[in-house]
Structures are given as structure tokens and as C-alpha cells.
Image (tube, rainbow, N blue to C red):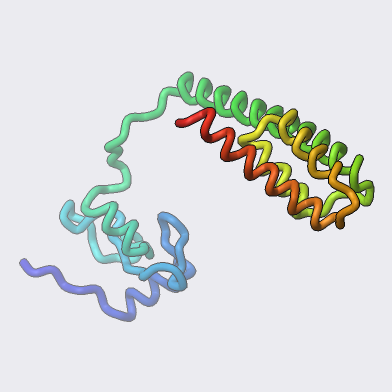
Amino acid sequence: MARRALSRRLRFEIFKRDGFRCFYCGRTPLVAELQVDHVEPVARGGRDDGANLVTSCVACNSGKAAVPLTTHSLPVADPARVREQVKQIAAYLASQKDLDAVREKCVGQVRAAWEEGWPEGNTFREVSFFRNTLEWLPIAELVRAIRIATSRKPCSRTGCFRYLCGVVRNLRSDHAIQNPS
């Protein structure tokens, strides 16, 4: 027996009832094509009445296929394992927070070293450069580079910063030679 298509009117009424949102993921027509899905699949005896029809995006509808919502193909998560994973994630986030605090302390020390030569404060560009450089260069080496650059007065702040960039670039190439990956 051939399956009959749903009427346009019924499709529109289902879309309207569901607020033009996918029942499963919430997508709207702005980001996904919407279809009408049978909650209980037609292949398993589902009917074409409004109680068995929902709005679904193409991705969710094709992913669900002819499987009823009451069928679970994935094992249920072990609560003890989930709690352990949550503890591990919380510990990881705490360690990241601690690491960020240490990084900011190092950046503060480098900023202070730069301000010894240029006491007007740090520009965003300078602070960004310090942060990026500390990802690969030890703090003592960066402070030494700052002292080398600031000792070359009288030069402008911009000229001194450019000189610092050159000193760090040389240190980077030296660092790469000494520590090949």
C-alpha cells in the first residue's frame, strides 16, 4: 500500500503549533530546513494525526529515521563515572585558573621591568607581546632582553620597543637552535 503525503495544510498547522522550531534541537527556518516527523514511525504503525506529528529539522529527522523515541541505542551513563568525570573537569578548571594567575603574575613582573625604563605604563601592544613571548621564553630571559633594550637610551619608546622585538627575535632563533623539536 502506497503511503500518502501529508497535506500542506496539516504540515503548516504542525509547524505553527510547534512555533516553527525543531522539536528535538530547537532550530528555526533561519538556520535549517524544517520537516514534519512522525514520533511513532509510520514503519512501526505510526499514524498521520497531529498527536503523532512534530516539527523537525532535516538533520534531526534523518538522524532519528524509523526509530521510536522510546528506543535507546546507547548505554545509560554510570552515575559514579559521571561524578568522577565532573570532579576531574572541576580539578582541571581549577588548575587552569591557578595557571592563569601565575601567568598574569609573570606578565606583571615583565611589565614592571619595562616600566623601569619607560615609566609611563604599558600599551596594549606591549602587554600582548609580553604575554605571547612568555609562552616560549623564560621570564628571566625576557627581563634580560628588556634590560638590554632599555639600556640603549636615548631612543624613543617606539624605537626601544622595536629594538626589544629584535632582541627577542634573536633569542627565539637561539632558543630554536638549542632546543630543536
